[in-house]
Length: 214
Image (cartoon, rainbow, N blue to C red):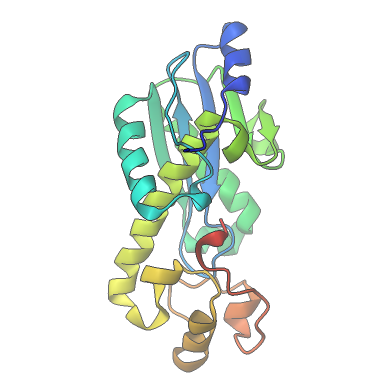
């Protein structure tokens, strides 16, 4: 049976008169390379999307299938990013906030209520932050799916230019192969030069977590 994130937070917002309840999530804070990608999604009041759940727990095929459904059926969505250079300049948490703000700004309407995965993000203004929001809020789960699908595709495109790092499979995370490639080839322009494993790849500070991380 497919797990589907509940809509308790959304229902509460709709009941209070918030038409545009927007879920926001990011993907890509943990990798050594590539952008942070964020998405914002607003469901139609009462809408359900079966199987939408924490994107990390879905197969690639299921994510792709759900992403197509989300894009075609929700009230509104937007995806945006913060670049590798912005991650270096701002730090990864602030870059994630920037990507979220950009995604929200690209929506076709102003949110009435923001639901944000994880810790509070003061730069987003008034919002409800939800621990494990991609499992507890359907709109956040949908945002996590869109963000991950887009970021994975970006890393696969970058892999064509820098195949030595294995980004098509590791998506920029600190796998053993990725760290070994940095040791041999040095970092690429898309590596985050402020991350310790990029500066000192001989120190395996990250677990080889592959796609289990955000």
